[in-house]
Image (cartoon, rainbow over all chains, first blue to last red; front, side):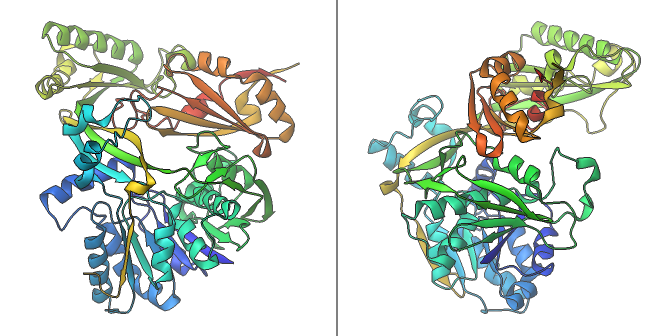
Length: 455
Length: 104
């Protein structure tokens, strides 16, 4: 059995979780997920300005803080912190280890090959159209606005890096579950066609990939009595060679591991549960069995898998215009009615100014912003306050900029009992949109490099 | 027969994939799973989210988990980074579904 601990469900998650996972009890692997869809375009932008940037700088900082525990406890670390520049991230990790007094002590593995941005024109010229999975349009329609293009690699390159002795593995884009499936493949030497075992690794990885969402965080069942949210433990996957696994957390930590919470995570962000497609296997989530096997311990077994497809998924980001969102808060009485009137005034003014937008969105936070008017019912005239949140989106940055100047005046020349946020006028932001596509696997080659000191 | 909110017999978690929101709906007790299967149909869910979901609704069954998974297409104003909404990733749609009433 091996223990795979997740310490980060997204970039921005708890900075203390990695240390708590290392120090709270025995673990074999520490996995950290840094890459949301939006992250790649931000990192690509940083890389285009500075070829030494483009990765998650938090990661080497974490390695430096945790170096003693990683080295002395013999824990291996797997993270997709490489962003669009995994090699430089690997060098930064080597430097961080050196600063912590462990120079040259650990082999570092770097997985590359996911970044197809430099190859995009060649691929398109050869007829790889990278059609949008949702709309069917070929990528050529937005080619000039593409910001980043990364293939979701699978778990085998990570396993290969570990096979070669890597103690820390840095990747670019890979499937989220690859971070924990890779270690299982390495430890148990699962073959590429052991579909049920690979599917089991996918299911276990899926449960822990969002951090504390598997240990009581964000769980709707009995949330009011959740033990010690402030000290919530992050999830640990105990994986067996035959594919069975258990989800648990370190003793003495907060939160709880229950069938309810793990089931919520199993159904989180999935599509067809009979066909959860990953680069390595298609997992069938309707085959697995689940039970509470003790306090803070949920057992999973019976996972079934089918052969993987001949394609990798590609995540492409492209520039799609501009947007801005601002707020004003209206107070009792009739807060909702006042906010609605302000919205009418603004829309009239935007129209008179002749400004064109692709979309205008008005929401009433405190009244019905999350669930909409139809589900939330008529807002009470006695609501203490309502925050009017209004946003515009369009291709013309000047029009969006003009919109941002129209909110503040309403604090003086519109309905009464209103307060304007201290942050000033809304910021105009570039809209980065996503273009999901498929690419034949034979067009992509992952490269694995393992060395004591990268580069 | 009693009319109850799904909140009383189920729990849920929701998230996003592009402009598509998913809602996993889980029976609190196994005996309530058939109630979900029979009454929380794609048609009712589409009608329930008429203000939010502009596309189609798909439903998948996970009898092993006493759960249903719903996909709400074109429900996030273009998706996470494009959307102007407060809940651009559909995180609160789980609870929105639990407002629906069913007969026990």
